[in-house]
Image 1 (cartoon, rainbow, N blue to C red):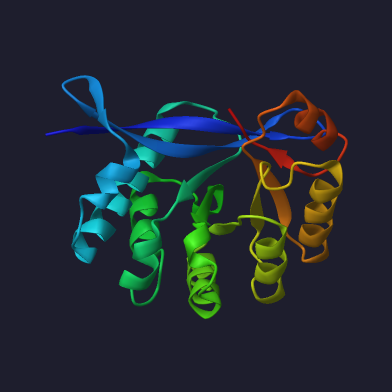
Image 2: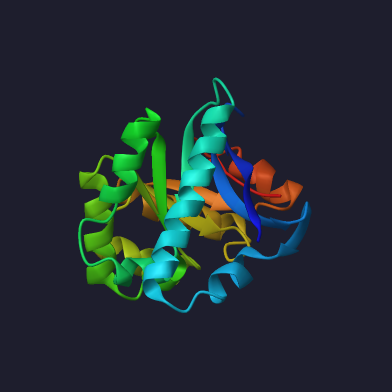
Length: 213
């Protein structure tokens, strides 16, 4: 007996300051009040089939809410739950693509994000990202730090790679992360940018996206 809603966090182009898109996060309401966290919501679902359905439902909610705002700039970034990657055997993104066709939304405006927990399973991650791309989506992979980023990019080349600014706190570490991403043909996104010092340095780097509270 709850309602699902969306909140959207902008991604800002480092050079121009323009909004390049939004990442969607689910919020759970009961009788008009926030009554659980997204983490608790998914942890309550033990059955893989039910979890896949819930994960897809959240993405449907985000897409419909995104479409309700006319002329929203850029792309919509949507997360997929780590358990869904293994639970869906093949053709990841096919069901969601069918829904987008009914909504009248171009899948190229959607970026599917995989979680950090998927990174150790490189072969599965590569298959999942390839499936989503074949269904018309762009893809992004989340990383936990420089070592994880470097290891990931040896085997997987997503369109975007998300880098936790808390794990690359110095200008040297940020520059290294950007160089690794660019050498792989991947656009870097720094998430959790929470200090003016980080923001000011990242604004000196062209073609980087910034995201934070």
